[in-house]
Length: 431
Image (cartoon, rainbow, N blue to C red):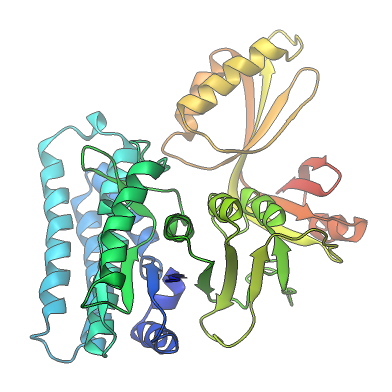
């Protein structure tokens, strides 16, 4: 029995019409066992991060307003999809919001400094997927598709590296096989098993997350363990493009790319694919399809093993909200291995993600994701031993298979703070 794995991102369930469209797509696969992974609705993850911000800052007014905005957005969709106010979905969704509300209220009873930002992040932000899966499960069942909802926190077991948890493959494999296969192989078999992307749990029972946009990785984990032949990620774009259409006019679709190229693109920040997704798929030879939920009949992009592939145009990746930090010894001595060891120890302590690094004789520069929760503490600690200069709110452009024209296109009208070239890739940090 082959089980297909589908993943629907937040854009595909950002409205009542989005849920209806998911239903239309799944109806085309009625005779196929489907393992479906769903992300949080629309921009709910961002909205929950705002809840977390007010929670950590002890800002009750901001906390209530941000919480209520999420509540109203979800119940607006529920009201449109379920006119019958007695439907069970109302009680289930209310219960989830009550759980989150209770967690926030209990937070006033302890000193939040004793619980890390990363821990609190996973306990609060993980509710986004719980909300969306509750709605989708009830909607599919109400429309005649037999669906079983499984809690991903009971399937994906991780360590306690909050916000970037590492999967316990052996334990997760046992749980996934035991829980999922019984529904497809049992006498009252389901056509769809549904679970949440992005989230898992550590052995103590606390929620964990797999990294931002980690729902893709959840789909890859499930496909690997269930021995699926392919995974389909349903997006709001036609496939993998050579640039983000939000900032690049007329991007070109890549009909097929290799696992290796996909890993490179994901590592450098391409938003279509989560960085951890490709490795388990490549190891098992599982094809990854990226298709448009707006045009489900179109071919999309397939990522698979390719012996030879020539790319005829550059691929552009943009990462915004970056910080460029330059680190120099106070006595103008050379940057040597001892210095680098000290610097990387500090970076590791703050879990700072380095996107580009470059050194000269007396300076070492790094481009990081801006995270105000740790940025200034990180800079302060580095300043104890080094002279520090930094630029905030810079952009990092990465161009795979670059040309002189591609570099000129990105640098025109901008101040280039750092440029780095390899055989196939160029990085530009610009202001």
